[in-house]
Length: 394
Length: 109
Image 1: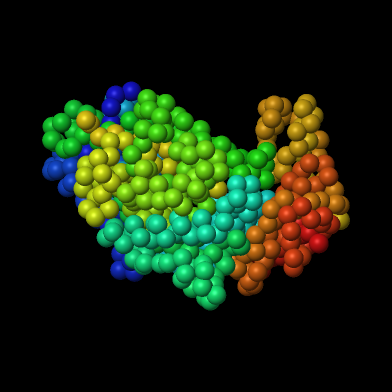
Image 2 (image 1 turned 135 degrees about the vertical axis):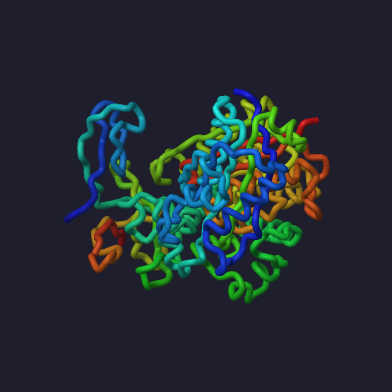
């Protein structure tokens, strides 16, 4: 495998974007990434688009073909990559392996989703289409419901309280205020979402024990990276941020078939593989973007990837260790909680944030002196997970 | 009573639901078809207020149970006061109407 560099990174602000189509958003993020790399007129050889459900949300398919047409990247190879909420991560994987193999030198990876074209319950239903049709979907299960059932077990087992969950929410919303690309720009307090007797009005139950502020918003958005070989990166004279590690693993589709449903095996395995490929340990990571579609997941993932022992993640969080100025900043971007989760965009947006952090371009939310970054893109309910390690050249 | 079909591996005895073509434990491809038992225990649950399009209700209780033969399944919990570990009785009923058609599934009382 030869080195692969993220030579360009770009995205558009995640929000409700009524004026933009999915391809409008993908095109804008792609141009941002291409211009960031200073690519000019050099040809892009292949394009991978991470998108979960354009056919259902937008009644449009073959969006990768549409994107190359829109950007005049013709005759580049173009594919849409679908892997549920990890579609963005899977698109990056495809680009990474295509360059690492030596087949291509310049690959554009874009991820996007336009979810707000449909009303909330429709969107909930479309997202629930990733569950098992016969064993889950027919019962009206939603992703927050899966997370609620998981949270109840995880919280019981490790003594996690709603206050711990609120710490995730407050930290990530605070970070989001420093990120102009984040969807939810809102300063929230423990009193407002948990301790005030009327906090349930601000923060109603979505899927008990999870409340509104435990869940990511429904967003429109897109993000893109331009991946190149090291030789091309040197020609472009970009800062060298390499994808040093990658891992992916799967688990049973339904939660109940896992012998211990609190054990997110695919998260642990994906992370272990990414660390092994990069030749580093979890403690070498300086900044991480985890998949906090639900607050409980940030805590559980921080333990499963090896940043903390099981049961210690919530304590470290409460001590402030995962804040931007803490020992291991987690989700300086605001995470899915604040940045938003336009499903197919998320895995790409996580890598975009790491590139900005490792280059020192993250503005007010800059993590100091970060060399190694880590991202985790959690598909299904933990049944298809990707992890990446990014490294800045010393 | 109509119910789901679960699967018991003829080689290692591992029980599975839903269907897999190869045993999750030993890769064997032959299974005995088994049914849920009448009694089961609640392993986890959630009370869902934001339900998908087509289910016009709030406060639906969904949970995972374990039957006496070890099979586990998700279903509709028809108890107002669910508790982890509580004993439930297995039943079968309408769980969702999809495109005007009644869809039946596991319910627990």
